[in-house]
Image (tube, rainbow, N blue to C red; front, top):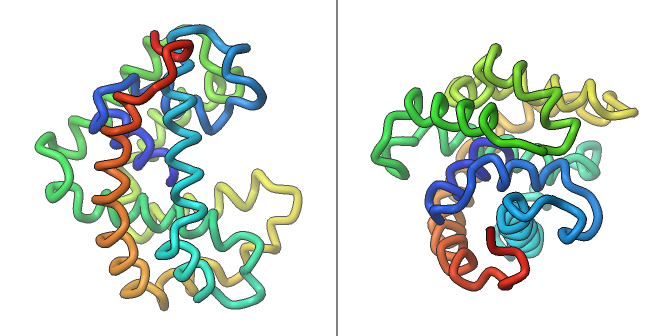
Length: 198
């Protein structure tokens, strides 16, 4: 899952939005992080572990061509954010615009976020990354942005066209898998180890 999905799952599980997103930038033992971030980081890792290992997502990743094998899991995460934004009203009672503002405010208000996320937060709001996922252009911009942050951007050559070709397969996988992930996130929020509770 990428940024929008992690924030949505945090809201769905009634846990800290900023802390859940911090999981993308938090390396090492959770105990090293401030107490108010620990549950979100732990939940983020549970979500990623299930997503990476689930039969549906592994099958979807396998449909990407060999030239994109190394980055296929990243592309799937980005494509799932696109599907979530595109069909947002089916998964959340609040409008996407209002939710995005809520998420940006939560990031701005949360102290002690990992440095890389602190540095990125103003740009996420300024360029409205979360809401832009609902359009194909926003998804393609996200793919280009991720490719620029990696040492071998050429690994993403042809990625946008491939995702468009796999649109139906991606939507089927998303619609089947994501409700399961929503349910699991609520269960995990109740099963958080005591040491990680805020």
